[in-house]
Length: 292
Image (cartoon, rainbow, N blue to C red; front, top):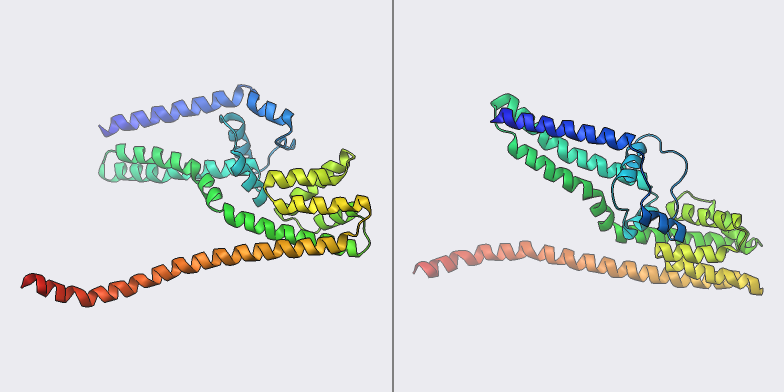
């Protein structure tokens, strides 16, 4: 019976290989939904430069798998500075790991003891499917931390813009100079938006508001509103410093609330050993009462 399952597994692998070869040589057609979203301007087009290194596997999967990355996951990937090709590479590696570990264990059992590999094959398929979605789960669970880090980076960017304004730079020059300081994901996104607005020969404030709405960073939209005051001749330095102070206080308050919630959970966990220790003294008298 084990030989039959080996033949079935070999046939499945051969069919998968032929399907992969056919998918590689058949020209891929763009999905209508993705093409319409690109024309609508709600998503950024993928870079024209070909992927290199391990991203080639992710690029191949992204072009051939149905469906697109969820907007929530795409937003978190942009805040982390991870491209879609690299994300699909992570998904493929996690799926391969889920397939390989039980499969190798089943082959080892088959060679050593002649045990049927039915169960390892089923487990391998399940773990491979689960592993494909593990990166989505990791990205989703770390969304709060990623957003907090992005807000902190944005507040630093606003401090840099304030310093540039104090050095008598214009609003546009201050934004460009501050965005060029770091290669953090938020700085890179702002730098790309400023470059796009410069190539389109329009003010950068509208592009910054669009980026703030896309990344769900209200502080960036607030920065764009404050920088618009430069057109009316208002003093930006004082307004920027006041707004940064307000945003940093709000961010600090939110961090304190989250820290208090974590402390409360830790307090509950610290009570459990005390309860167990108290039960050690209560159980013997209760047992004697029940026995009598």
